[in-house]
Image (cartoon, rainbow, N blue to C red; front, side, top):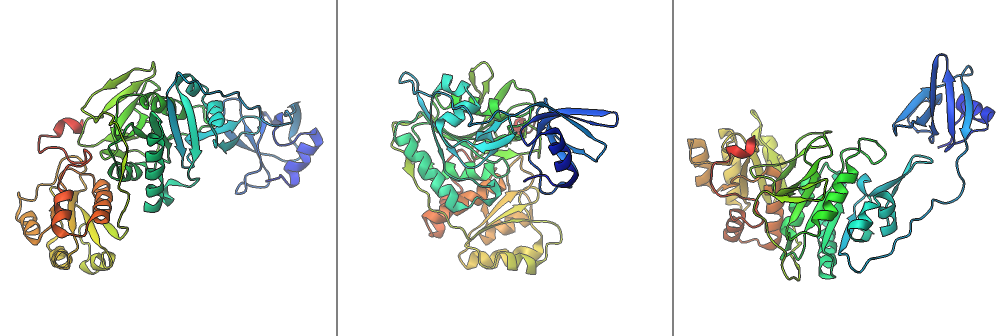
Length: 434
């Protein structure tokens, strides 16, 4: 947006415009930076500058402020880097979904643009060209919370097609907020993988000096060349830029809203790590590449509900929440419990042929419904124990299972089977909670 009023007046007086490098003096304070476009929700007397350290600030201006033009922006188009495929290097496919991790920053104006072609990604992270040939495609441009099963289906199909066409691996830049849901969905939809499908995000946008995008993306490109045939998530392993952690797609959760090492493997060790020097260190068993082709089973039942139980949850509210559901997953307390007032509602669902899966909101540990009478009563009613699955993983899995079959016996069989590493054997899991 264009500036108006006093901001426009002082910029015009200095012969400066958006994209120019200026110095602005206000009383005893002085700031140098690139003039950014006016932000719609900021005040009309606020001038936005991108400082030399990469951060943006808003400077409140008035007629007493002095502005000096230091350097005028360079006119013309952004220089496109040369990008020539190297036949000696493996090809890695990058499927964009709109996340800032796969965007480049034009520091002349500070604007962020989506990377739509291989050369854009090489422009953003030139090291990618040293690691592999990049085959890039923007599948979506959307916020991750707007993802639905239709988006997951398309992503799964695109990923499978890329592997079948010779890519060594597929990297999917994705918003972090629902990255775990997408990872679980692709894990169940894709089988017999001839290479890894790697979901990657960034907690800090690519125009910030503290961005984690660079290491996350280069680590994913390195992992795409390894002997791995699973859907995984690759994110910072600690707050510094030392290594990225490889998480199984059915066992990963975002555990912090802003830290760079926000993602953790739950009830399982991470599969491994990719270090800054390029080393891949494996920490747990993982599937190797298959010879292909990829097996795609992408059908899902959308009418599945995930209910988080809390003390005092009214039976009537529970009933209305699950009224039209074809399947229900409950995040219960402790070993897998809900209040006795909900037992009749759960029984009604099961008698109507609607599968009910019990997980625990504790996250670490597993459901064990044989310990207390409440759990045993739920088992007798026909509740399916979710073992040590994350509630969201069980939710995605039930959507997928119901997309494959409506037979009650088969649903129970699939939900209690370990298909994609989502269920660990009944062993002590305390070591994974540290």
